[in-house]
Length: 100
Image 1 (cartoon, rainbow, N blue to C red):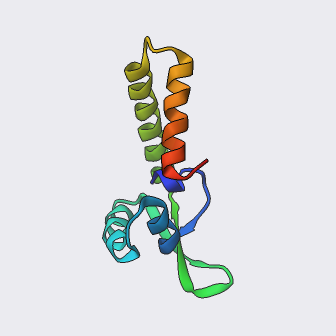
Image 2: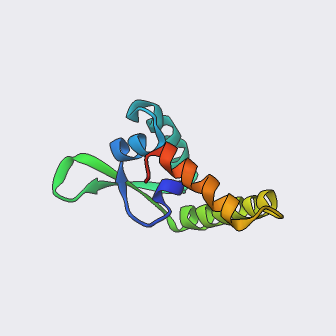
């Protein structure tokens, strides 16, 4: 859900690449999220073979709650650490993830 929180729909293949799993594995997760009303599957414009996944309004609200909870956990975990140390740690994690 975090990969869809920016409001941009993704294909199952794109989501699989983002989370490091095969599309076939991700399909079961998406089935459960769709059943709960958190995501929808829509035809991808210009490509009748592809399906794109996007968050529903409920899914966006849920993603916002999760993001806020994770931010609070992060604030508590890093409380008392120097800001430059926290940023250095984040830079290392971005580099390891290949995000630059």
